[in-house]
Image 1: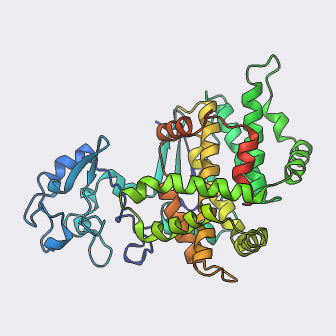
Image 2: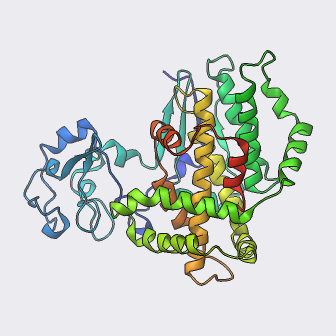
Image 3: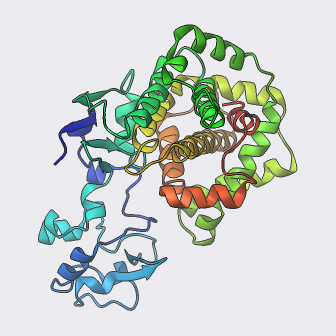
Length: 391
């Protein structure tokens, strides 16, 4: 039994907005179904009144619910219909299963999303993930993300990792520098510890908490030379690579096809520097929103049960990829819209949701991706700075 709990302060205020959702989680996603739910669905019928054209072609409206399930990549998932929607999503964006049988008949994935709960030996941590527009609304309306709950046991075995995560969250929360510098600061600290881990004089976390050290480090990072166009080219290539499988599966095509077409045009002709400067000004009103994303994502991703130090470092790298992909998707959308003088919050939010879902890998898949796509899954600082340039 966990002795302590920690949660994001808005956790208990969340509720699904159902038909008002701008980016339903019941469309174009791989919706997994647990074994207990599969067994339950064997004894339930597809809800009465479900139109045949909402179902996969091989499924009859009178069939049992489990007829909607299929296997993919070793998982049991709901087979989407021709519109790439869950067959149980009705015209009001509500779930036919819930309306007919109640929430107790939902799969665990559908029941808890977008909540993420991590059970440690001494505590339970509760978070909400960025794949839901209602969660992003919380961040948009908050000056900062903070947490409530108990102080965990400082003697627990993951206390050092927790202290490192807390240090990263403190860096993200400081807001004294651009978000790109905050990311680079956290990476420099973790990478420096990684390099010195086996040294005779192992570093102390307190060394990195020193205000004078942090000030000097961030001033140095802020004054490093940048190559904005090189950063843009790297972000663009990474964007096309990460979205490739989703395009092949025709998922999120309404959102992705125009973005990828615009990205492909950038491979042929890079923009001029003044354009990048103009976009930085246009996205600057969303600096706090994106910083809140970093804080919330850092809490959720940097430390999960059974994490080791190198896992934390790789998860920070993946956070940088996610952040860069969100930023780049908004940039591409801005170009598609004719480079307007401002960009709507709703457009930023939907690109955040899109890229959060596309990059929402689990830790093992993230490690596989980093190992396959990079010479070393632990980057050097130069590449991290390149990826974060122009953000």
